[in-house]
Length: 425
Image (cartoon, rainbow, N blue to C red):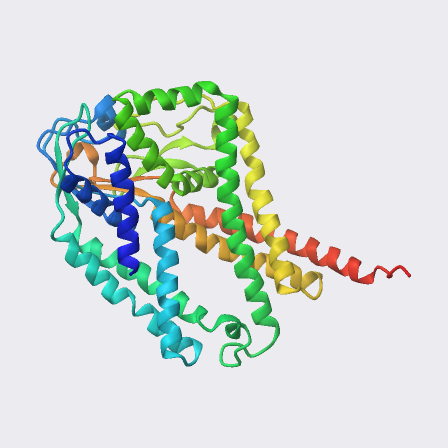
């Protein structure tokens, strides 16, 4: 049922584009294949792409640093995180059903919930062998594509095991927070319950504020929105509609890519291990303090020098402190912190949860391209677009631990003062 629901979302997106006449010349069977491919893109499954003479519209191949004008075999992987969120929710629901069916203690339920990953991955893998399609982009060379068969098994297996297991454990409802098998004392289940809630709030609020800030920045700089619209609709209104529709599916990706620079990181493109090319930084606060981006510019990347961003973009500095402090406050309240130091502890724990969750989001949100064959001008033949997940973890841990602990401490102090306040007669 999970596979059918996720597949239905992909087909819905494809046929909405088809009914809007955004896929000129495509038959219903071709549109169904596009929707089928979206199923795999919701799971970060790479697409194996072949082009006998690579050329992308608007010189995008040169801008991406790819080998233009050559025969190319590559695997390109990314995930539309809106669809991935649906996958996670449905897998948790499936795991919860499996856990409730077998009953027993939390570990037993979690293991049985994780088992949904096996049939789910087998369905994904077996269906991948029947899918191949042609990619026709205006002003670009024709390309053939099919899902990576190994990835079509491993990614659904990993997602199913993690979120199915979570669903299995959650099938105990509130009992998991009072189980003597899991907890030796009364304090730690309260603390972890608050930390999990606070960490999720940090992530959710950080992503929402990042998107809100992007909207405000676009409104304050009309040239940005105009440039985006011109780029998107230049190949035609129909093609532009497809891009806008896919951009809506990728809104969580955009938010994650903004949140890391807002915390002091970098939105970059980098190579694989052993590459001679340095990372190319597109967006960072360093551009405001002494030098224009990119500081490690290398002409082999083929990227243009970027100008200094508007000063209003410094307001993104407010996103991480607001998100982590609010998360720390909510963590302490959810944990019913009994004192200032417990509030500080729970807030710091929430920061650790936030770091782990954001790292997972960054791994799924990253765009990778791996070229096969001896391509000397692309070094190792591997490209990664987006924030570097280990650096994102470090930044999130620093912001979350300090800001969360501060918020938890202040929440506990305020709660203690309100408890001491004499009641009016």
